[in-house]
Image (cartoon, rainbow, N blue to C red; front, top):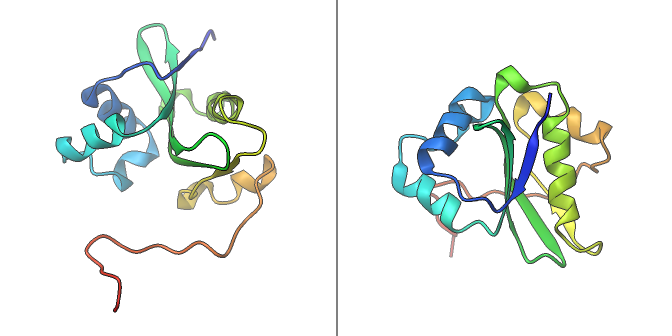
Amino acid sequence: MNIEYKVNHQISADEFIGLLKRSTLGERRPIENIECINGMLNNSNLIITAWYGPKLVGISRSITDFHYCCYLSDLAVDEAYQRLGIGKQLQVQTQSQIEPTCKLFLIAAPAANDYYGQIGYTKNDRCWVLERGSEIIT
């Protein structure tokens, strides 16, 4: 299978939403909120996409300073194309765009929690999340 990877190739909100729905990530993203989806795409500074012909089959969407920290916010592969190495290649392509001094961070989907340690990530128990609607306690 010939998968083409593209760096910062512009995609539409509809293409992104379609891919999220065809992956397991759609259930954890605000796919009904087009303004939020557009903001996610427009404010990311590193997006790697995977294409099978004209079809978007995978994405790695990150926010990074390219030198110290890269937060890989969305890693999604169309379920029909999973287990072909596309997700791993999206991460390799992402890492190739950042400096060797830059750490790659991500929050694993529940079903993928055991996967990342197998490919070289270190689990970090020091991550904290402030949920939507919550405020900093003063």
